[in-house]
Image 1 (cartoon, rainbow, N blue to C red):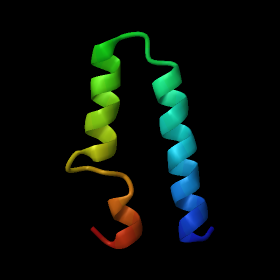
Image 2: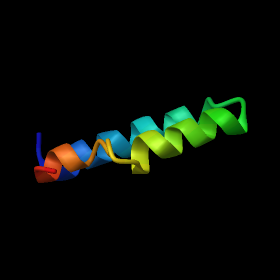
Image 3: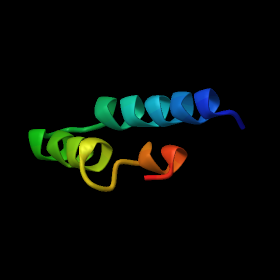
Image 4: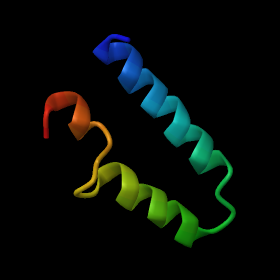
Length: 47
């Protein structure tokens, strides 16, 4: 799987989580997961 495909899959997963989030707290948790220190995209870049 190419880097572009991995990032696209991450994007789709994140968007699905956002659409299914019933509360602002859930959205905030997704924000922390995606943009925080454990940013899933960092594993693609060796971070």
